[in-house]
Image (cartoon, rainbow, N blue to C red; front, side, top):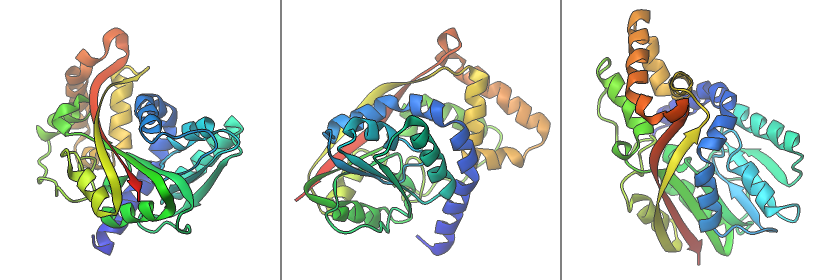
Length: 281
């Protein structure tokens, strides 16, 4: 990936940070089943040391910190200062003393070899500037026999949370087909792709699990649209290019599209993700 593309991706995440921080609690609830699956599949236990790579606004770092307890520890990393600052504030609010924070990119982890029992990344590796290098770094920093566990989105067409809004937008704004190997939510959506990449990075006993779960949160359709239209930099940028009347029309169409997934005015989407786990030899 070129330096220009890397800088563009970092700039977008800087621009997204405020919105992600504003919605951090909702996002924590939405992906809580994924966090629990990650903890279970990585066999994270009290007393272990864990590194969370590309942790965003603090999850799954904070949940894992509570799980490993005072005798364990978590290193929370992200490339975006604002994300880390929000994570640190939340950790202080929760009274967590077993979390450290370090700003760094996933392909350049500033830690010695064989430092951690477990390395995790929940919905982060898809956006790495160089995922092959990032995966090698995660393998490098875990101890022999340590675990590397990652979660990514399954295909868009299996996730109405994603495709319903994409379909609405496609009626108003044409977009070139995405680069299947470029940074995007669905970079590793094809089963087997991330497993192969983790094996190539040096992990052994790599296994893949399809997560079927309900993406739930106490959001109305209007609140969902506000979350989606602000936390997605791509969507936000497209909307800014359109006249206000068309933006309003898109909002109406979006609410109509998602309404069946809001029983009792509460968000409830079926969702699929891929959880890949391996070990360091």
